[in-house]
Length: 132
Image (cartoon, rainbow, N blue to C red; front, side):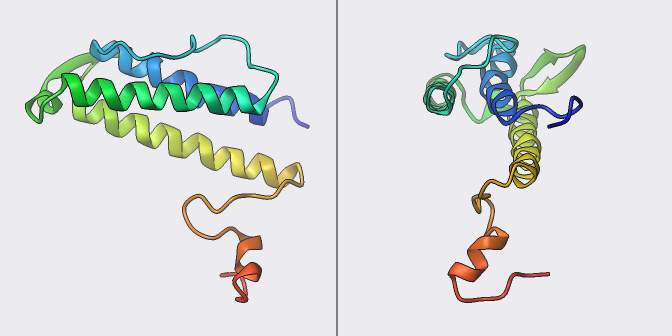
């Protein structure tokens, strides 16, 4: 498709691996793949692994962090970030790459799901014209 654009599989695997990569830096032990590990051949395997990583994160935060922990600082990529900022950056990072995935899906002629609101195709299914 384009040598400068990550594949859908690579993008999906990247956001999957980012969960443990970022959050293990906070002292949590999150289940998940190494950030540069080989992309699985099936989307189902990526989805399964993403669910395990995100569930592992939810459980670890609930078990190990308090409201006060969100203000504690941790070294992230050479800077001191509050734990709450780490969570915020993880969320924004996920959103950023999910948005990239929707663009790649459009270029590949795939149906784009309405993750954050109706996709263009979904407006017609609702009997409404797409928003401009």
